[in-house]
Image: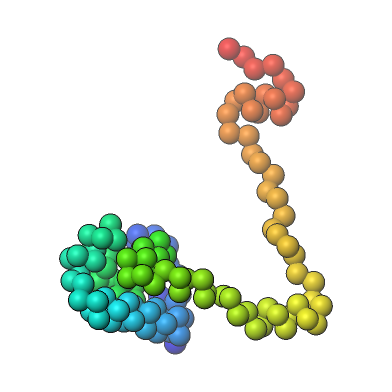
Length: 130
């Protein structure tokens, strides 16, 4: 099952139910860590530099909350080193590497488009007008 979200009333994207469950679980873990430390929601929001509404959304697993907010809250809780555990044991990636599947190291470079009249003139090798 998928969840369709509308962000800023323009873009729609599908959030897999398993991803939503993970976000909810992470938010609940953060909430429990905050409560174990006896930190109020107001104090946590103030220390993290976010609003209480954002903290509530984070703890409820709202996918619209920025990753930076998660990282800051984890830092306030003293759990920021847990961020290093994300993707550290990439079993599938290691298996693909072992069987020798070729992967691109980086995406191809995009051709830069001229942004000003002078850039266009330089690219076309024409003298710009004043």
